Length: 247
Image (cartoon, rainbow, N blue to C red; front, side, top):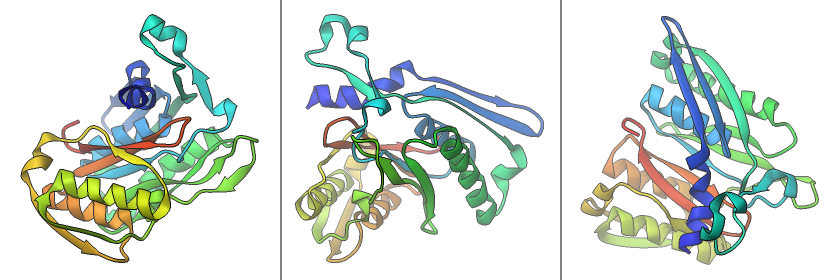
């Protein structure tokens, strides 16, 4: 399990990120196994509000991942496969950071469109605005054969879950366990702020989506908490939480 977490998250060690700022224009330049994830992360910090990101449930097409085993020498007990990724550049005006919600929606959408045009052969993403949090989710993905097919996020699964007077960490674990039981998607808790252990929450739902419940829990902890759902070349993903203001 620890190795699986390393395989999914190790790419960030090789990430190259730059954010240049001027009087009116700003540029985000990333080179990362997950370029859209990292670009969203940088834009999120500039906006200081949550924009969640989700990987495709699995990187199945051989052209979408690379073998990095040699870079780990004898430390890797098995092959280290990471998303192929690459570079992404995005320029925006500083005034867009303090606009209306509609303007922010347009800004994030433009970043997603920049990625989709830069990588047209693989997964394609779209923005969902719930009114409280922005979500960047894949809507089509590439299968092992290379075929492009629609993708349904496991977090859109309606679930039944009850968690009474528990800490936020356990509530999230209960939500993700319900996703596995009711959809079959295996999502584990990855990196999360330690403060989540100190906030008590209660949940009772028989038809809300996992996404809705996760937002509800995180908003109770802090309105600036966000997540990145990272997956790999094998079934199973990690749910990582961070603060949009400070990371």
